[in-house]
Every structure is written in C-alpha cells, then in structure tokens.
Image 1: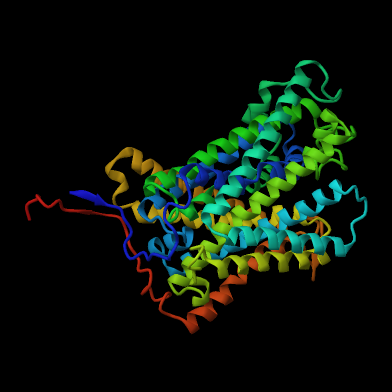
Image 2: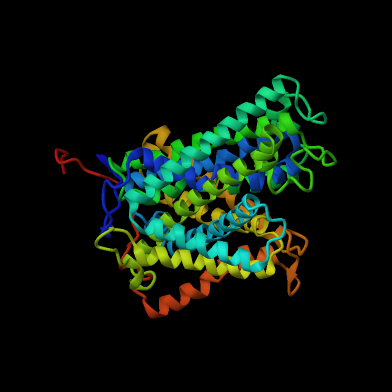
Length: 504
C-alpha cells in the first residue's frame, strides 16, 4: 500500500512554466507582506495596543500563520494550481466553500491594494513637501499608481517577478540599515529619554497586559504577516517541482517574522511608547508614519525623503505582488467555470491573464476612489477591514488540508501533526478571531470613519463586502451550475492504494 496524495482533474491554463525562479517566488511572498509600508502603517498601532510586549505578540501571532503556511505547503505539493485556496477548497470541502475562499482572496488582495495606494499618495505628498493634499491630488496619484503597477504586472510573470525582486531587495536593504542605526543609537545611550531599556520581558508572553491587548496586537500582526502565500499562486509558473514551490511560502514566512521582530525591538528600544513624547512610536502625530519619524530622527530632514521613497517602493512592489495572485485566482475560477469565462483568457505573447489582471487593478482603483470620499483614514480602515477576508480564506485553506489528508496523514506522526492537527488548530483560532473581530467592527467607534446607518464603516468595508459574495455566488449558480454540481472540480481525498506487486 502507498499514499495517493496528488489531486486529479486540474487543468493547464496557458501559464508559462519556469518563468518564475525559486528565489523570485520567495521574493514575491516577501514583497506581498510589504515590510516597509506594513511597519509604517501598523507598528505604531501595534505598540499602542501591546506596549513593549509587541515582539512576543508578533512571535505568538505568527504561530497560527505558520500552521496555515504548512497547509499551503502540503496542498501546493499535491495540487500546484494557480487557484490555490479556491481550487483546494472546492476539491477537499466542496464547490461553495472553494468559491467563497476564492472571493475572500480576491477581496483581501483588492483591499491591500487600496491601502498601498493611500500609502503611495502619502509618500508622494511627503516627497513633494505638500502639507495639504486636495481630492484631485489623491485621485491623480491613485490613477497613475494603479495603472502603472497593473501594466507592469500584465507584462508577464518573468518581467514582473524580476521587477518585484529588485524593489524588495531595495526596501529590505533600507529597513536593515535603519534597524542597525537604531540599535547603534541605543547602545551609545542616545535613545529617546522616555524609552525603556531592552528587557527580556519584551519576549515574555506572561507580561502581556490583557487578552484584549493581545487580540488587538494579533489583528495588527495578521495584516502585516499576510501575503506569504502570494508566491504559491505562481506555482504553475515556478521552476522546479511542486514540492519546491510549496516551500517558498514557509521561507518567506520565516524571513518576514525575523524582520518584524528585530525591527520592532529596535524601534521600541530607541523611541519607546510614551504618548506624550513627540519622538515616541505612539505619539499621535507619529503613529501613522513610524518609518518616516525614525528615519528623520536618525538621519535628519533627508531621512523623511529616504523613508518616503522606501515606503513607496514597498507599496509599489506589494501591489504588484497582490495583483499577480489575485489575477491568477480569477483565472483559475474562470477556467473551472466558477466565474465568467472571459477571466480565463491568457495573452498569447506574455502568457499572463491580462484581462483578469486589469480587472483586479481597476476594481482596486474604484474602491479606493470610493473610500476616499467616506473614509477619514484609508490605511487604518483597510488594515482592520482586510483581517476578516484573510481569516476567511486562510481558514478554508487550513480546513482543506485537514479534510484532504485526514485518511492518509495518521500513517506517520509527522504528517498527522503537519497535515491535520496543526492546521485544525489554526482554523479554530482564525474562526474565533474572525467572530470577535466582526463583533468589534460593528461598533461605530471602531476604526476612524464612524458609521453608515448606525453600523461601523469598517464593518461595512470588511464584513458586508465579504458577504456580498453570497448573493453573487447564488446568481452564478443559477447561471452556470456545472461548477456547483462538482462537475468541473469534483470532491477528492488523499487515499491509500495498492502497489502493483501487492496481492489482490
């Protein structure tokens, strides 16, 4: 007897195999997490919620994310399909779960692009030294940014992954340099006077002040760690075996957590969290632009320009790295007849889903323009809103791993642990966090933009837009029932089969 763990019935989509190198695949995962713009938009809020325990909150928060990454690794090895969670959910759980997982992935990618667009607008204003930015400025920069990133992404996987690699190396170089400067200042005794000295309590989980503080810190961490899976949507185009492609998400996860923990520690040790100190991470004028504030303190006035450039590069590469997997998810959904067939078209010259790519880009632009009219802080509201969509499709990925492998996993303790037990724990945690977060988001005071008809705007952005997927799914089921009957992606489980030499 041996294990049969390869999913059958998957379709080629016209994508170019080998166009993405192994190193480029890891880089796409790193770029999608967008460390520079993620930290500048989330580090201050994380510090305000968890204080000096932010490093241990980052470490604890990455544990369920790592369990999800294990699910992605195993599922990519069995089914290297560009649809990722859509395909796996459809095969392992059922077509409706797969469809909704694909919808959540698309929504999360679009909301992340919206946040990145606002980061670009802010960075451009800083580079141009503009104190006031009228609505036409926001719209002009947004249009230019989205059209540029979408165009570069549509050129092809090889060209866009090469561009992403250059941009990612640049932003990581800037972050590492800044972290080194911060640590040197701390060692020289030149930290902000209100900052506490480095302490082992910063990595002591029992020093976290409350569960609520941990939960809020976890939600911030969820946003900044999200994106490691972007590279796995490129598995059909990545050189090497499916198993090698599956490892790229794990590698990206490890590099990301190390970066965030080291940088958060350096920032806390240098700037501290005194809300009254104008140089601290949590001062009201600093909390939205931590990287800029730290760079200015360390380098001087030119530091703000350097930081703005690094953040812009981060947002640029992140947007490309989220458009790529979103377009490929749409491609897969259309290929298996879960959405209109037009999205399955692949350009013959570039061998990339050009129509799907532009559709994702234009949807991102439309949502950004809409939020510009109703949101007081697009970055903050997007960070909070995207968490529900991310939890949803990560939960479906984890459950897909559990249900697909449960018949064969318990033949070995290590596969039982990594294919069933740990993904089950991740799914349980993410479901609980989603429920608590959705409840919190109902409050009109949650986020920065008040309410619409008495319901928190963040809830409307994050939960209502996710639930819009339900009527869309029902309508498509009426129009094109073959996918929902399981005809294009039938249910399947890993199972044991007899070897040729076994006696019958």
